[in-house]
Image (cartoon, rainbow, N blue to C red; front, top):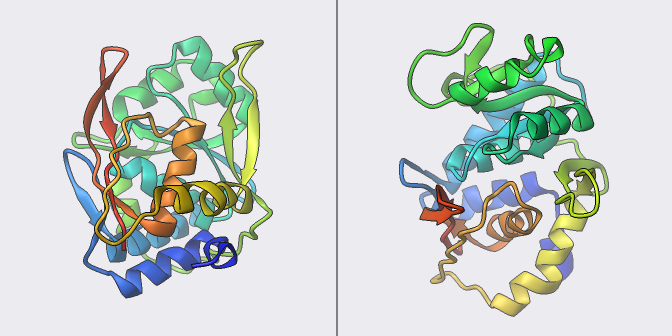
Length: 253
C-alpha cells in the first residue's frame, strides 16, 4: 500500500476495515473489546449523537479517560462529528485540568463519573459542562450515558472533515512553560504513520503491537493512527508511575 493510499480520511479507513475484516478485534482492554465492524458502527453512532447535542463543527471535546476502548472510540467519534478531540491525562491535578479546559475552550467532556465530579468542582464555568459518562453505576445529573450514546440513532451530518482541517488538540509537556494546546490534522497524523511507522514496523495480518504508553500522549496519538491504518489493538494492563494503565496490542486487518 502506497503512502497516498494510507493518507485518507479516517472514516474511509474505518469503513474499509469494517467491510474487509468485520469480525476481527480492532481494540480491546481488560474489560471489553470491539471488532472493526463494531468500531465503525459505534463511532458513527457516537458522532451522530454529539452533533445532535448542539455542538458545532470545530467545537472542542475534552476526553478525560484512561487507556481503554472508550478512549479510542471517543477520539475517532469526535473527528467523525467534525469536532476537535482534546485528550487529557486523568491523574492530572485540579490546577492542570482547569488549565487544559480553559486553554482548549472545551464545550463538552467524555469521562467517567468520578472525574466528572472533579471537573465540575473546578469552577462555576464548568458546573454545567455537557458530558457523556462511561462505566457502570448511576449517571450524574446533567450527564448522559456513553453506552446509550453509542447505541443511539438519528439524523446527523458526519464524516465531512477534510484531511487538513483541525481534528485533535494535543497539549505539550510544559517543560519550558505551561502546557500549550497544539492542533493536529488527519494528514499530519497519518503522514508520520505512512512515512515511518508502517514501513519501519513492517506490520502484517499476523502481527500484534503491545503499547504501554498512555493514550493521551502525542506519541500514542501516532500509534492510534497506525492501528487505524494497519492494525487492531488488544490492550493489556501495565503500570506507569505506580498507576494501572493499559498497553495496546494490535493485530493487522
